Image 1 (cartoon, rainbow, N blue to C red):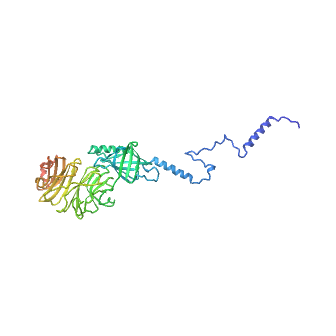
Image 2 (cartoon, rainbow, N blue to C red; image 1 turned 30 degrees about the vertical axis):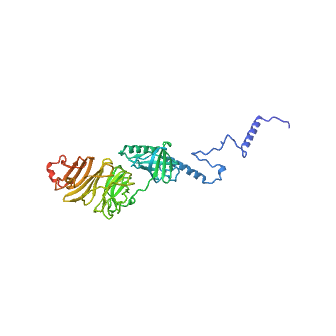
Length: 454
């Protein structure tokens, strides 16, 4: 058959049929219709590629746990003070005392007589004493980096400017903390990018005859001095023991730590009052700050063989106690030695009133004063040199200046029911002053107040 040209429409149909067959062939791909495989999105997990279909099913949960730990630590560092979840901070549950600090290589010791501390719990909280005020702060450990949040402290004025300056420098150093090194007995913290350094030693155990009272043990508070909502001293008794204890709280009275000077209530030279443990032992205290306390002990039935009375002193929150020189009574006879009023104006000048005996409407007293923070005491009044102030019960003594003091008492039925003596020469001589009636009270009622108390 002779060749003839195909119809144009036939050519078009044949081309279309060829293209359709080619597209439906197995293994054929069209690059423009399916993009190449991409990495899974961080927010939308993609299907597992065929090449990894044989990997264990635990791969994805393990990755999820790692991501979760990093997020938790970043979002809430104060909940877990360590950089790794489940790992306890290396400084948790440790207590330290500052030895020296300052420019690296040129550190200076802390001011003599002060105790600067730092302690950590396991929940991201730290605190301690700056030498004058107590403080609290959040902390976080990331590797070898130690950082602190905003420090919150009590606001008591330090009596010594050097102590106040030291405390402010200490707080500033903590706020600028960086790298640290830790051993069993030393903690070193660099601050200001390594330009300064804090050197701590492990805190020693607090001395005392007993452990901290258990929560269920009764505590009878007889004297208390709080410095803020959390910190305060008290004198009290534990259970039914006939011994006044020196107690300290840092949680607003929820719990109390027994910091009684070692040896109180036992026989031996360490006994501050020469007492028998079977006898009633009472104490009077002065508490100047959470760090400073003075305590004097007495017993109900003294003997001629007992040691001279003393005052026990602490300037480090009860960690250590020192005994004053003996309070000498000379040849003055006394039935007992019962301190009742112990105080101070500035932590250096102080006073103590002790009751020596009673009888025939007399309350025999001696008054002592100190000018060196309680280390030594001078007797300024006693029954021999001041017989005019020995009558009737004395209920209180306070100095307003080293030379000026007021002595109060009451004597119903024998003399003016309430009386007040004052001195302007440090206690060498005393004069009685009249107490005016309260404003608006008729003068006729004065004679009917014979049983009022001082």
